[in-house]
Length: 153
Image 1 (cartoon, rainbow, N blue to C red):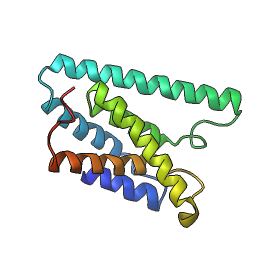
Image 2: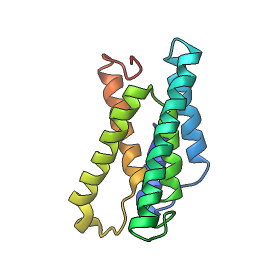
Image 3: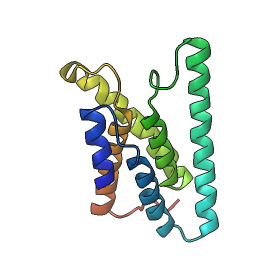
């Protein structure tokens, strides 16, 4: 949660996040996922499916940005930190949990962005920061109310 907190703070304050926080988040989320998964092969299958899912989403976003909107993709439509955070997120959960949390994290980020857009005078969405804060809330809730577990699927 501390690593996710740093990602949130840096993304909001500086709109840049230290690069080493993303591999660190990947390792920590992956470790928690591994320790809560009974079978190592299931763990690897979950990660492979989640990474494939993120890659497909990014591929569609890239093609849409380049072909339809005719704009640059990286650091215009989506930042490198956001992409790295998507992959860190993918390593952290079983596939069903990942899809549900990933979708809700993006909806949470967009909702908060639209609510606070005028107050914060933001031009871009601090997506990695908002998704990190979403995960902090999810982990805190799961710690307080441990049933059902995030890793039960």
